[in-house]
Length: 226
Image (cartoon, rainbow, N blue to C red):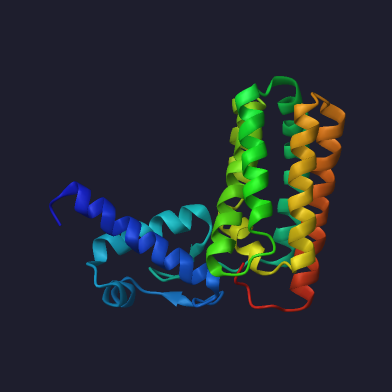
């Protein structure tokens, strides 16, 4: 595939197709992913599939096994707990800084993202899950940008597994997701009010609730498709 634009489009197609199958549970946790099979299923060459898998490995959706094998990532309960504890410490501080330094435009963007998540909660379709997950990722990223701390952003990017977070939405109950959406609105209100303590407190509660929801979901042994 000599055309760079075509190659990029093919890689994006493979990335979104494989990612969607992981999020929906079509590809199960621990299931092996082979370039040849994926290429055949998608009607693509192996090169864009290989590039898509590399991106998914970087994001935490896929992990390398022995040799050249790749599998849908498996997360231990202890790993989940550690991630949430680290996020609580870092993102609570980030929310406090955002309450001090966020621009009016960033506050408005947080309001828009909160409204978007609420509009699709509880999710009725796979599309709703995608919209909520994407908006959540943008919401937390906007807060970190508003915190104006490149060092903090770097630490969070190392600590947070994007694939793990995205897959969680499929494990949460409707009640869990409604509570989470309400937290996003309150975090936004605290930042808009320029109240660092309030923002940090709500962010901490938000992440503690998420950790509890993830632990309960794991105990129910729901297929890891969140």
